[in-house]
Length: 109
Image 1 (spheres, one colour):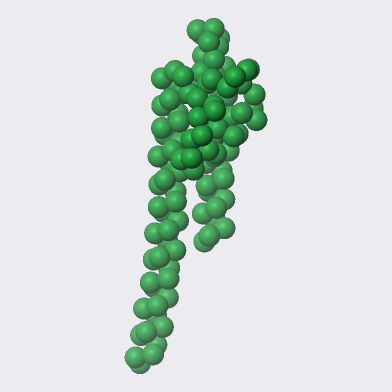
Image 2 (cartoon, rainbow, N blue to C red):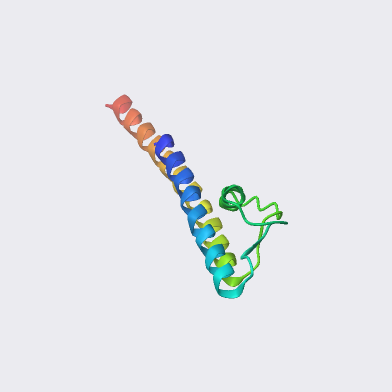
């Protein structure tokens, strides 16, 4: 269960990388301005770094979403990151509680 939760977390972070790159590409094509401030051209490595710092809600600030589309994507990713952690913890607690109840019932029998 822990492996599946970790895999889901990493997959979520990985899925936001191309989404962020697409938002940036469309922003450059439509407005001539990047969607993220990085101190240089936005590279895929910047988006991987930004994706996982956002997913974990660290948000160092050295890669910054600067238009509404990139900001919305960052908010969605941060919320998803918190929800995934909450789901993993809930499942682990539920599994541990169920195991405890099962052992107690066996002991009482």
